[in-house]
View 1 (tube, rainbow over the protein chains, first blue to last red):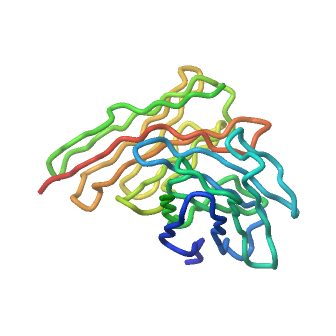
View 2: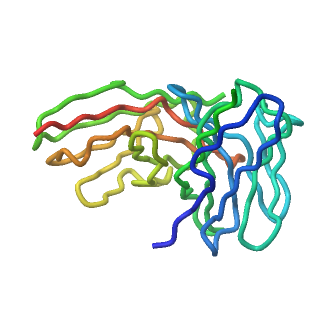
Amino acid sequence: EPEVTQTPSHQVTQMGQEVILRCVPISNHLYFYWYRQILGQKVEFLVSFYNNEISEKSEIFDDQFSVERPDGSNFTLKIRSTKLEDSAMYFCASRTGSSYEQYFGPGTRLTVT
Amino acid sequence: KQEVTQIPAALSVPEGENLVLNCSFTDSAIYNLQWFRQDPGKGLTSLLLIQSSQREQTSGRLNASLDKSSGRSTLYIAASQPGDSATYLCASLSYNTDKLIFGTGTRLQVFP
């Protein structure tokens, strides 16, 4: 069964460094998302992406964040200058154009020191 | 602003019990509600999606119901097994948006 994949599974970075989290959505999916979950808290929406542009973003998704679909298979989240409070599990999700059911990847645990 | 809450926060039951997990939402204008399972340190596995026009959705031992008027959804797990131990999350999708709003989850432990 097709799955959303994410790399790396765990990333440790120093405050102020740039990180890129990578996702490969399910191949026939058209809508892509990033969510994050700070330890012990709710899963929070960051951004949705469709037709090569951001369709919706949350207040969390400020100028330090960007998303890109550099080719036909990858979907990336970049954090330009990481802060301690960016430490969280980051989930990528995707869905088809005909169903609103979102499928999530296994997550990337980002630790900012 | 949509708020989603789940009770109880944690539940421990012996194997074989039927159990009900609750999800409440404040905005009744939801388009659908999705239930997920999350194992410790892992991703979210979609269990069921129930459309606003539906009252129930079933998959195996799982049954989800939706009552928009009362702002509630329930996930019923029949004949629970130790392998059902996980955190169960509900998430709502409202009209005119494409973002899921998640509840805090119910941490379920089924002991043999």
